Amino acid sequence: MTKNLSDEEDLGYYLDPLVRKQLEKSRKAVLEGDQDRVFVITGFEGSGKTVLAMQLGYFFDKDLSLDDICFSPKEFEDRITTKKKNGVVILDEGFRGLGSRAAISKENKNLIRLLQECRQRNLFIFICIPSIFLLEKYVGIFRSHGLFHTSIYKKDFKKRFYKVFNRQNKKLLYILGYKLMSYSKPKIALKHRFYGKYPSTISEKEYRKKKLDAFKDKDNRESGEDKYKIQRDVLIYRIFTETKFKSKAVSKWLEESGCPLKPSYLINITLEYRKNHKISSQL
Image (cartoon, rainbow, N blue to C red; front, side, top):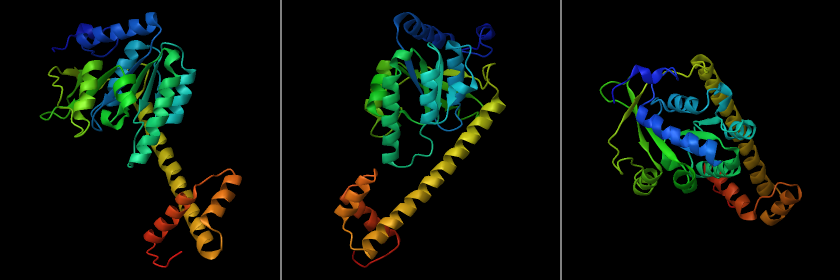
């Protein structure tokens, strides 16, 4: 669609009139119908997911600030419990760095809990994530109301666009594309241009600093957790190899100390330790 400068007057940036019309319906549902709205924004890194989330969010909430952009589940939880009604909260790259299915599953369970608890807050929530297929069915199909999928033009890397999947098309996409993680069906031909302009209430420089600091903190925290796990595994292995304690006894002892671990889990830890350190002797 041709860009119309008059469409920018109230926002300071371009927002496709067709999209604006649909957003107005969402605004009415929240303000007058005692509802909330959850939108998912997906796309490759660098495709402009967060900028689009800010632009869409500012449409709903002219007080949108850097505090409303969250980089961790904890920050997200704190914000949705304190944000004023009818406000906007953005979860930015909430699944960043999660490489295992177990880790993704854990974050999904936490996200589901938060979205269930915040329903009565009447918020507009945006979840920025690489792919909708990383989300559990509850969020991907039932809890979210729409999907914006961002892309970069192949012939001009500076140009960004997005496609909009309404609730029904989003459901079809999740069902048809889940196995191959493909966005090819249903076919959405209409593309909407957007530009990399931040809302007037958010500084790009301050946003990038907050994002960098958040990722550094996350990396440091995960590094500490990895060190703790290594120490735990060493201690458990040495308990089994250098004492007469059995797995059931150790499990009971840990449970009494408030740190329950099943005997089978303790055995798996020792087997994994032996494997990683190429220890062939039997326990």
